[in-house]
Image 1 (tube, rainbow, N blue to C red):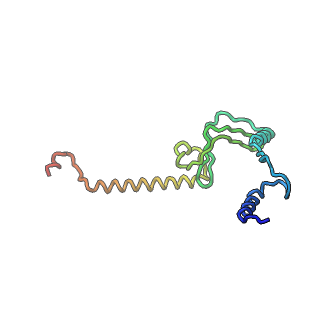
Image 2: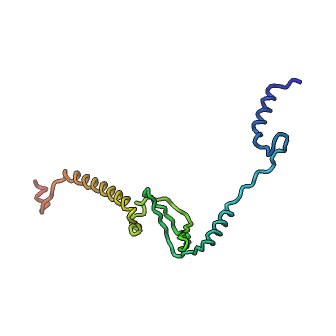
Image 3: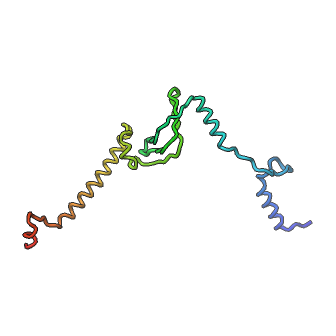
Length: 159
């Protein structure tokens, strides 16, 4: 029995394609149902159970939470759910977080800065001073072409 080489090539291609679908060895049935993945709801339940064991309590009235990183960025939570267990020294913050630069939060965040953020604050201040000094020098160059006007404008215009 002569078999066409194209048919042999197609059979080999099918063997390679379905080689990983079998659940057992050669001669066993193919898997008909995909493996079902676990939902993340169980993970959340386990986490809540562990937190309950630690004795965490909700802390109401917290509008925002800022976590400062060593790189100078801030992890900012707006309207988070905060839970704490002082005995276990554990704090749980849940909610939507954003990674922001320190400059974006600066006016309202100064009272939250500590010694470890002092370097970042100095760097920001130097950056503002450099841009402010550059703008002042550019304004002084523009004023050089304008003559000073004395007390009486009419006298200066007749000259």
